Length: 373
RNA sequence: GGGGAGGUUCCCGAGCGGCCAAAGGGGGCAGACUGUAAAUCUGUUGGUUACACCUUCGAAGGUUCGAAUCCUUCUCUCCCCA
Image 1 (cartoon, chains in turn green, brown):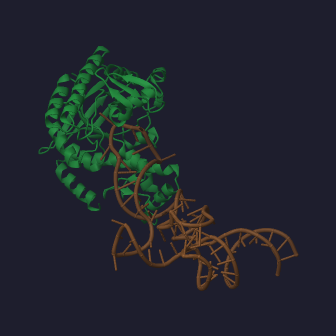
Image 2 (cartoon, chains in turn yellow, orange):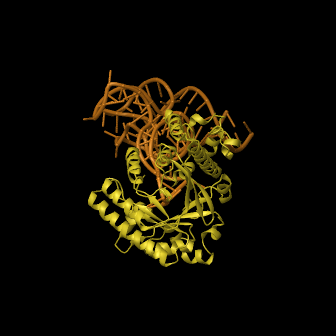
């Protein structure tokens, strides 16, 4: 089994840890947040700015890229790195989440999932093998297996069936990946909904297959924060410590802290970029909505000390103005802010872990973060 | 001075006898967004002792069972010609 993650420090009384993830396009310090660029571009910001902030691992999406521009175009360009001129690492999600979020347009079978394209309605079949093939064409530094993500509060029977499909697909993905040469990395995904027996079984089974990294899926799909924390902690205890752990789909500071406390190394989330476009930005005092009238006369930056353009060059008042005026720059500046904020937040976390004061950092950060809400 | 158009709830603007506390925008307020069908979506926006009542459509009178809607006078705004 490939060993791609080296733990450099573990906090003595929690599971929080720092490490280095070695990938084909460079080393990634962990714990790390990954910006989401579904279509091969992080919405509202230049690749070079994402890179300048310090990010060297972003997400793209197999389902979306498969539908558009399509495998042939990607092949012609020699993969997504060259096509999009992003020369650092790329992790691609498999489309498993789209099985969940576009549930009206799909049918899951043992062999794979039949989708109806959200773009033109055309029908497509995605199988675990095909998804690996597409990701090989994309050239993903980390590929994800096709999985079945489920909503909270479904019956145990349904959750079990979904997990069993996920399990079978995971094995098929792994076998196919190896058969194709086992290039770069393929991560397995733990499912099991919100049932302990299924979560445990899933964590153990996925760990056993031999993936170079393990993801926890099926969280942050509408459950409560408590459920999230409970199931995250419960699941993680069954995962091997020597491999990178990735919690899919989280991205608020409080959720990130919870994940890090449980020894998670990677996470991604659309919230930072989507909310930014909708006018919400991260601060140490919680998220604020820039469009509100109360910011009209504020000459303060969004976040004191932040190094992004919005914070070093403009005020909250101006940011509110450009949002109200519907200027494109508004979403772009806010996107840059949120990504800058999270990058520096991750740096603060890593430092706190290294200096053995992670729990104190977490506590004091959250006190302030929740104080205003 | 002559002719014309008009004053509607925070703003713009529909309504032109009952189904109007009054369409639709904007603005305000509140909320949502977490492996992106999202630079998006939802709710709310006269007052109360609220499934009912009260006050409101420039002002005052009037017609009518009933008026933002019809009539009279007043007032203000805008446009055209002198």
